[in-house]
Image (cartoon, rainbow, N blue to C red; front, side, top):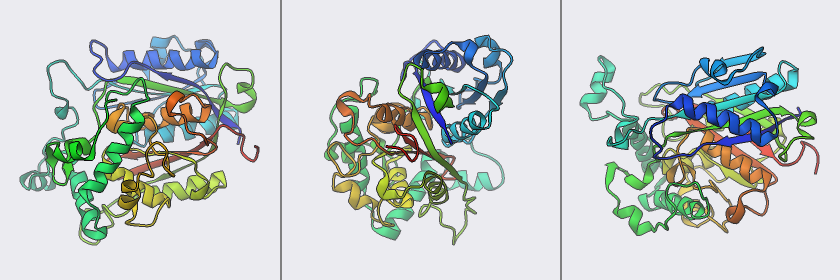
Amino acid sequence: MSAVIAGLGLTDVGKVYGRRASDFAAEAVRLAVTDAGLTLGDVDGLLVSSGKSGGPDLTLAEALGLSDLALLEQVNAFGATAGAMVAAAAHAVDSGQARHVVCVFADAPLRPGVRAAGAYKRRAANGYGGHLAASGITSTTAYYALAAQRHMQTYGTTSEQLGAVAVAQRAWAADNPVAQFREPLTLDEHQASRWIVDPLHLLDCCLVSNGGAAVLVTTADRAAGLAQPPVHIWGWGQGHPGYSWERGSDFGQTTGAVQSGKAAMAMAGIAPRDVTVRQIYDCYTYTVLVTLEDYGFCGKGEGGEVAASGALGPGGALPTNTGGGQLSSYYLWGMTPLVEAVIQARGQGGARQVENNDVVLVSGNGGILQHHSTLVLSPNAKGGN
């Protein structure tokens, strides 16, 4: 494999109003192409993903004036989409199907005067969905609260341990100029934040953001003369456990990160101990803990203790979500961890740059722990130094 990420584009993110998701997408594509030192005329592949607000779609290619594309698709695996898109783009450039493929995600669920809490609210349904609604399960957060409760009951994980994840990521966000929340956060402040669904406090939950992000994938040979240092794609994988939502399932205890992580690390030829930076999908603090466990960075049920030890934050033994993640920086589905992974692999993290960026792992989690993608990235060519 010789596929690399050669371009990165990130629009303004957060409470950015007056623009459609398609507008953010078009800007992100242009930024990624310019970042690579190319022009839109060099792009012959486009993979598009949209969030909850609708758009962008395949008409983005026309809006950008792209023609004679060898690859044009919409991709959706929810929060696992970014990893899936990059894998598909890597296949395309490695096989010769396309030369330069841009993967883009954009969303604009926030509106002026409307609370962010309603942006991802699940609608009640008839039948089984009606029974869930009658029992109080009316939001995505309620499902993740069930998962977190099961982890707590099984392994003794505590709310304070979940809070340690939020505190660590806020510490990283302090040095990220695009982060929405940069002020210091204490564990006491986490514990005092209002309940959303027990056991999840407000500060256990990710942000809601408007914006867009894109990466440009090409081959190492083509990237050699481009504007940015290439980020080599060593491996990828997916996992879709298909939980049965009934007694006896592993819901809340294990995730698709087990299957996805093994596949990506096997392709990359590495083990968990070789990973030097972790960018973990963090829709909730609980998701970080269970994903770290499932990747093998600690034993099952030990994620809470690891977080409480300070290992995930600046100066810790397991630097994780070095831009602040979706909890403190911004929420663009799986593009949030991917963007920070590229920044760290390039060595462009500024004050938050980790010393050892040799192997960067990126996770994506979609649905209610139903879909997972993993990427292994590096500033070095696979098998090189």
